[in-house]
Amino acid sequence: MADQDETPASKKRTDPTSQLARGELVHAEVKPLDLSGIPSVITGIIAWAIAFVVLLIFRDELKKNGTEWWLWVTVAGFGLGWIGLAYCRRRWAAIQAGHRPPTED
Image 1 (tube, one colour):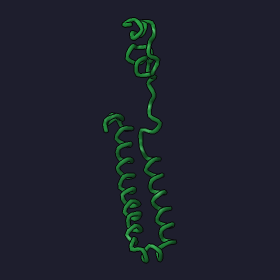
Image 2 (tube, rainbow, N blue to C red):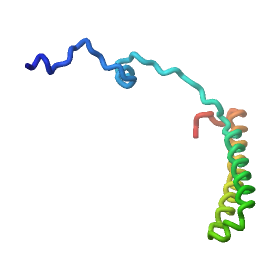
Image 3 (cartoon, rainbow, N blue to C red):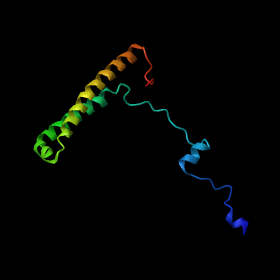
Image 4 (cartoon, rainbow, N blue to C red):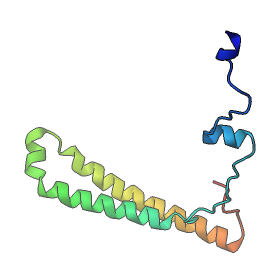
């Protein structure tokens, strides 16, 4: 009876976690696509600007529902995006000049 309950030793688990634990899988070293972060921040600024315009179109409905503050959230996101862009540009300039490593943050 005990022989039927035991799993054979030759039967290995094939899930990736078990293979990694046994050293059968190796992770490739992949560099990040963008170290500066500038394109990502610019995309965010554009998204907040588009959201502002869309909400501006529906401003009367926002007033009626008492959610006009959403409009100002987009303004805040747009403004904070510019602060983030200044930070990313300054950080990227320091990395390019060799004053700080690219993986520090």
